[in-house]
Amino acid sequence: MFLAQVTGEIVSTINHPDYDRRRLLVVDRLDPTGTPTGAYLIAMAAVDAGVGQRVLVLDEGNGARQILNSRTAPVRSVIVGIVDSVDLA
Image (cartoon, rainbow, N blue to C red; front, side, top):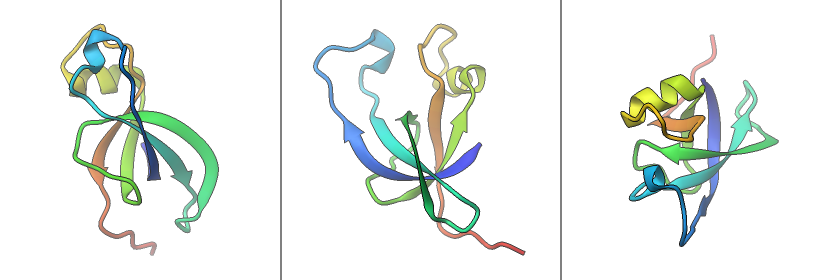
């Protein structure tokens, strides 16, 4: 899992059936200080995240499919939480 910032949304008219009624968001991985790294990827939203929000991304296919409750979904990354704050000790 890693922290990221949502930078955009992907809209498509034709997609895989497992993507129906689900949102695909573009996220930019954040470094430990919260600075965007430019390492973008596409993640499916399991929570109601939007552009500009910091999120927690699960980037592991089997775990992502478990969250979506589908053994065959072609997905690797899922947004599993919206981050309110980060405290580094």
